[in-house]
Amino acid sequence: MEHGTKDVKSSTFCLTDEDHTLANAVRFTLNQDPRVDFCGYSIPHPSDAQVNIRVQTTGAHAGEVLKDALQSLTAMCQHVRSTFDGAVEEYQLENPPVESMETEECLPKKR
Image (cartoon, rainbow, N blue to C red):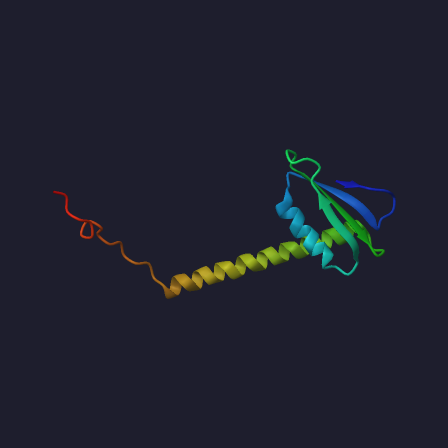
């Protein structure tokens, strides 16, 4: 949901069912964009799962800038996921699973 005036270069977007995790990542991504003059977020109340993200641009439409930032963040997450999955697969190929050991031999005998 978008809140704001008729000025397309500054808007506040309300994201429901979200918290600091997504909001901080979106804020960081938005601040990397040279079209962004200001970006920040607030959580109106700790018990509400709602985040308000404020975006002010140099002239570009704030909604488009937010959309671009979210697409960029999605691409970053996909890259991290594929890199992680590749590393796990490589590790598993280089380190085959060890067969289970009999633990009874290692334990002291009961008297």
